[in-house]
Amino acid sequence: MRKSRSGQGVRGSAVALVVAFVCAVALVALSPQASRAEAPVALGSAANFAVLAGSTVTNTGATTVTGDLGVSPGTAVTGFPPGTVTGTTHAGDPTAAQAQSDLTTAYNDAAGRTVGAVTVAGNLGGQTLTPGLYKSTSSLEISSGDLTLNAQGSANAVFIFQMASTLTTTAGRQVILSGGAQAANVFWQVGSSATLGTTSVFKGNILALTSISLATGATLDGRALARNGAVTLDTNTITTPAPVPCGDVNGDGVVNIGDALVVAQFDVGLRQCGVAPFIHPEVCDVNGDGACNIGDALRMAQCDVGLISCAFTCRLFTCP
Image (cartoon, rainbow, N blue to C red; front, side):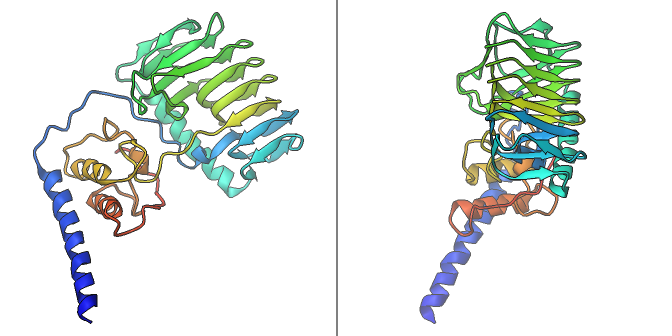
């Protein structure tokens, strides 16, 4: 009995230290401001899908899809086999319907960003762009050369491209990631339809209002997410980027006291939602109560010192 009480005492002391530490740091009057950076677009359950369509998914040839494939409100999926899906196919089921709902939220978020937008137009080929928000009032294409996205050493850097109309890549053109850029943090909000040319190599999440077509041999490191129309495939390779771990709000790849401190500071108004280092607010709600607050921070801290498992299941949180 003495040993048990001792163990409980040590455990209780650890919890008390965690609570005291998180609360103390949260209440320190530090400036919450960091350099302004775009927050990733929260995809919700749509993040599980490599391919998601509104009407149909049609495939020709030996396409390989790594991630879930779905359609809603339509139900038609054709061409699998010969295509293969390493994941689950959701044809008009509730899972696909929820993913479409989350896609609509994500699309509206991406389309609604305005702060610091850089105006672009026409052909992006041959350019090197740094992280930020890019806006076109018409169409964008990658045709006269490859497009390089340079994260300048930050794996958490976010690129968002808004276009009122189409997105097109011509045959063989590439989107090249450099400086630590991650496909998961690149978002293409397309006001109509996207077309990836033959053998082109594309990176990022395509959120299209209408349809998405991948020509023969095109590859996509990202997601093809079409709200209303079809996704058409032809001997393609589509690989879904790894999701952000539940609780990893600062995007460093682990859930630890650093995430707990960011959330605690946010809860008392010392951090802005979606501003670095609080770049992944969508994975904040680790206790599933619909909020992002000190309760979540405490669980992150407890996970870091081994008092509870770090295998959290998040409820999607969006910035107020």
